[in-house]
Image (cartoon, rainbow, N blue to C red; front, side, top):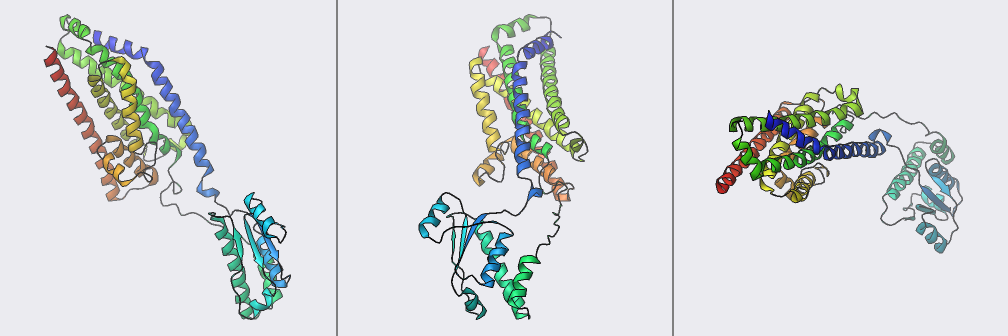
Length: 387
């Protein structure tokens, strides 16, 4: 096993590169988890804004509207002066201002009500939230007045009797609360790390064994060509499986039982195994093309980052343009990410979803085989020209 031992020796020399990318992988996982925690759906709640009410009517209805808005927002006082209002809006001391004109109650009760004049921060969507609350209050007062309530009773009911809150439960058809679990997000970033580690390490190894002096020494040795190729293939598989196992161990360490109890865990493992095979094939192909060690970093960065950004590793597929998605169909990582999204967003699969999942697996296998065959063709042609 002379060739295999040499393979492992060169691998040990490149371990710092693997450690560096594993640290990057863990850092990405922690940052992704923190950002998702801040945007969790279950944390949805109404926002309280800094608003002001200029009441020129001082009536029961206008005071009732002010009290109603004060239940949901921070009501601040502001002078009835356009310059002062503009300054406070500019410095974001207030985000919304409603002006209640004189005789508002009289006009409203006479059925001649017009929309109240409001001032909002330009381009802000939060003002529409307060608009809806103002309309809700006035419409409710009109409805109750038509039903026989006095104005005072209707205002009291709206300002004091609407404090009950309803319990809302989000429908969870996916089994994951409508979003991908944290370990699925980790698997989303896994291809970049797998590609980077294997392409860097194995490119250097391939370069070493493709050196013409080393190859001539191997040809003169007692190890047959078939044994040499077998030992090289074994070295590739050992390194690939070691990286695959280590990267799949990290989600278990970080997320524990939530990851282990997922019924789709075998699919996650197989999906990542196919990424490992494609990474090995790409590493072999790049090792054939690259002839100098100083070019390895540049070539590997272009390939790994290019595929990561166009196939949905770093940028979510929903954000990618149609043209980029169509081009990404010709790259293996696109099918990995499609399968990962399918696994992350669904607790149970329909027949068509199973078909999509297995199609993604099959296409990744074909990509790995095609890349490996192309690399073998180039190796054969290269050795013919050297001979």
